[in-house]
Image (cartoon, rainbow, N blue to C red; front, top):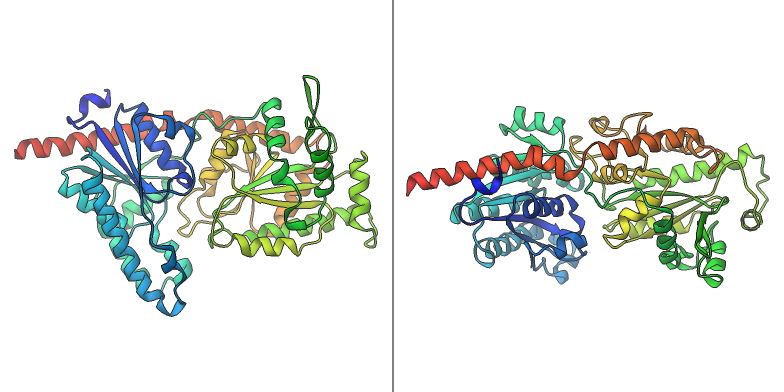
Length: 488
């Protein structure tokens, strides 16, 4: 049954994100599906900051409304006033949400809200749905109280209050979606909420990159991959030379007339996207990088007195080693980024380099489709959600090494599409095994790539949304509309 036949005369939906829309891909995909598959006009209420994907911006049925954020000047208040901020900030956000949801946008048939954050989002959307006679669906990505507990401690009174608001107002919704079966079970058993599992799936613009796409991307990223802040490492010398020479050459590819080829002595590219928050232990990756560097030197019986530049020059002149250089490209924004960048600067590694960057929405899938391995450091504050970044990687045919936790095996299948690790040493072991004889052999890595591509092709967002989300949203709106029709 087509959803449009089930709709009231409004034919509108509102997607609510108390966060940066450009950094909320799942909610962008909801907006696209509501517009494309449900034929609705969609109002997105969110913060600005990062640009959403071009598909969202170009869709004429999607209307983005940017809210004003908590004033920046108030973010610098002394820690002594943090309890006051914990009270005032939600009040400010609540009134801002109510203004947009009740006055700035047309009344929708349904509000679909991202959780977390829960306070004041769930309260505001529930009130707005009552005032505007709209249905209300919560998309549970995680639990807000567990995230707050990372900074305040689970025993904090603020965390207990937050938990109550999240459970009370989340339970008042007309429908619920969630990201894992483990979360579905938790919501049913301990929250009294019947949620439909909507697994994250990659949309159509996540796919393996062609050789031409890789070459163009690497040429565009020359400056980004150049030596950061004057730090010299195993790729900076070569990057400098390629940027000063033929414009048809990059660190990874070369072009002669119309023929493009990958360089044999190129570094292996490992991508990790992060929000630089406490639920991702980036220090684990740094430790693994140091271990890889030292273990390779030991395997090759290299004298510790050999300077880094001697090895770098031999690599640049064409010498191939049993183990490649590793270039970790870390994408994302977040509060702990600068702290880890300072730690990276103090590392003196022979075969490992790091680059941090924020990519346009159109270039991020190309980077995943051009990389050799993905690393996921997400551990989940609740232990019940799955990292969407891994879903995107699989969509691009990129295998993943991921931190092991309670429900990650719903997504990452050992020896099929990735590997799991629990310590820096285990991750270093995985890197040594997967990249031995790179790029010519690496049979284990090739098998994982085939499995990742198979996983990515097995289902796409549009298919998953039509099968699981559309029936729920349709039923919620129909039930809600019939209730008000009988009352009139």
